[in-house]
Image (tube, rainbow, N blue to C red):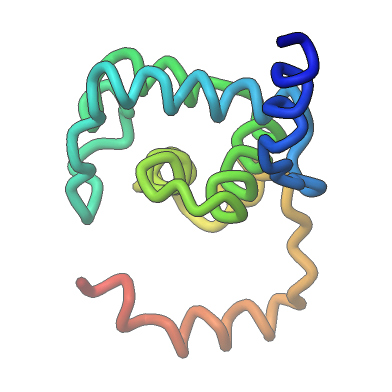
Length: 134
């Protein structure tokens, strides 16, 4: 019977995940396990709050309370593995970090260098005025 056990183990399909680190995969599994127990409520768009605890249940809000590099790797993993609720949650978290902030504050939050000249920046603001009126 030992031989049969070995054979069955060999037949399990291997799923290659070259783009997902073990630590991130661990968090993805943690998310899926929780989601199976208590599905996350749908995220309203546009976001009603920049506080994730007011958008989803506490467990999910705590889950995405992580360092930015981890959050971005979770987005990539959710996208790569096609896990829509996790993609929704992680993208909504990034959206919550942007909500209500000026371009300068957003650059500080995400450590983005402004490579526009003052003239270029003025032109971009002018071209995108319509967004701010909504």
